[in-house]
Amino acid sequence: MRISRFKALCFSHTIGFTGVSDGKHRQEDLITAPLPDGVKRLGGHFDATLQSFILHQYHHCHVTQPLILEQLRELGVDISAGQINRIITEGKERFHKEKDEILRVGLRASTHVNVDDTGARHKGKNGFCTHIGNEMFAWFQSTAVKNRLNFLKLLGAGVDDYCAQYRCAGIYEGSEASQGLH
Image 1 (cartoon, rainbow, N blue to C red):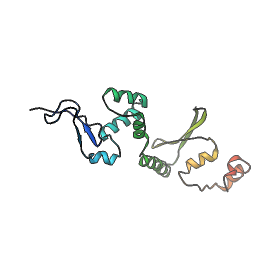
Image 2 (cartoon, rainbow, N blue to C red):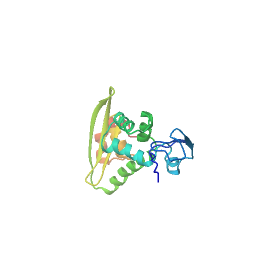
Image 3 (spheres, helix red, strand yellow):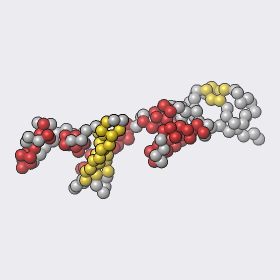
Image 4 (cartoon, helix red, strand yellow):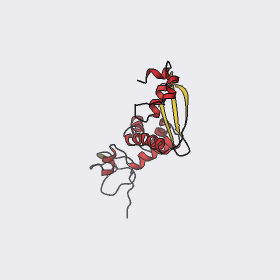
């Protein structure tokens, strides 16, 4: 009995043999076949195993994209830097929606929240990261500005109507924050 080995990481409409021949085809032969349903659903040339490997390396192991590319090429995977970037960044809308929902639910369920922000320069521009949370949840958002209006916008979790208690109204008059509150 002769066993053929194929790589299950990369798919395309035309699949070439890698490894041992199956006896019917030479190693140079190409076979055209439809893409597997799982690969079509993911919208690319790579199966869920490879995509989850790339995402795990990038997000959990903090491996940079160039090092992921080098590692995959050493393993014999034919992939470009652009394809790795697309796997990491595109089609993640449901995760962004979930992140936004974490803030809304966390604010509703909490009696108090802690907030903090930090800043750093990247490519010559200032950037800021705001944290809102407590022992039950943590939410982070990166923005280009750091001011009260930006903080109120983030704290509003998508709701742009602000209300202040009457006794606090005097504090806001004439301040930077009052310019955005009408």
